[in-house]
Structure formats: structure tokens, C-alpha cells
Length: 114
Length: 114
Image (tube, rainbow over all chains, first blue to last red; front, side, top):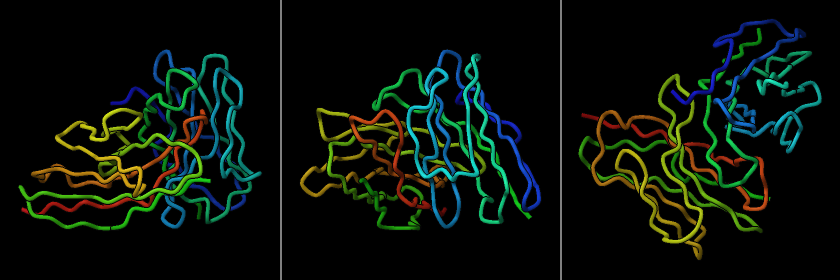
């Protein structure tokens, strides 16, 4: 158990809908990262937050957005969903905003868009 | 930009045999290197990392990796595998000056047969 929790574990929804994925980092970790794992794209970095502020952005679609709240949990919002958004979404956390700090991964949320 | 190539998508091996999972990377800047393991239906777990110093890095579960700067490789090895090592293995890099993303390879599925 990494200490990072993600809810829900599974999500099934229809095209055009909007969903929210939630992540609680390890106790004391200030950085939260979101990754998408799909069969065709592999594991891709989406976005990073550090202590409530956006720090780095990757291949995140405009239909997707994220935020980190004062209690340090983070939410990833996916809207106007398409079939191709079906994937496993991972959240990871680290204690500091540094490139050598280990990222601890949650178990993921599996999103299925029908 | 950075990229990571894992040269084998699947590696079948018999129990107690040695194994090597190959990883090559490309980067115009210095990077840190990582190997992660993903067991079925679980998140990613860090096996080992290279930040600096000795090019031979030892990790958890008996795995080790060697950083070769001239060949831009970071191959993962284990002298004797167990059935429980069956999983997907990801090589990743992270630019040293960047506080954000891990760039992952496509993954290698290690199948350990009895």
C-alpha cells in the first residue's frame, strides 16, 4: 500500500458525459501528479500540482482539468468524454517539488466510456 | 524532448533463470532513470533509481540495473526470477532540472513460467 488513495476504482459512463476522479496523496506529500495509461498511448503524464499550484503540464487535453485543494487532495475533471478517453488514470504523490524525489502511485481509477 | 524505448514488449522466462529487460533512452538534457513494476490490478511501485554515482544500482526484490551513459541504456537484470516476478515493468526518465513528469517506456511484460 503506497498510501495514495484514489476513488472511485471503476467508472463506467457514456460519451459526452463529465466525470471527476479524486486523489488523496500520502500524508505530508505536497506534490500530486496525474498520469493516463491506455493501450495505444502507454503511460503519459498529464499534470502536476504542488501545494495547490499547477507546476507542470503534459499531454493533457483541453477537455480535462485538475485542481489541488487546501487539504492537498486533488481532482481530475474529464468532460465531453470520448471513447478514446477510456483508460486507467493514476495519481502519484511526492513530498517535495523535486525531480529526484520518488513518486508514490495510487491503485488507479479505471474509466470506461461507452 | 525525451523518449524511452523498451526493446522487448514481452519476455518469457523459466523460473530460476536469469533475465534482462532492456531500456534505451534519448534526451538532450541530463536525466534521472527509474524502473517501476506494475503487478496485475495494482499501481506502479518503484524498483530502483539512478540519480548519480555508481552506475550499478540495486533495488528491491533482487533486481539491479546498470546505467550506461555512452549507450544511453539502463537495462534491468535479475539473476534468478520467481513466479511472483510476473508483472509489467516500466523504464522511465525524468529531466534533472524538471520538477514534473516522468516519461515512461511502453512497458515489458515479464512472464515467468514454472
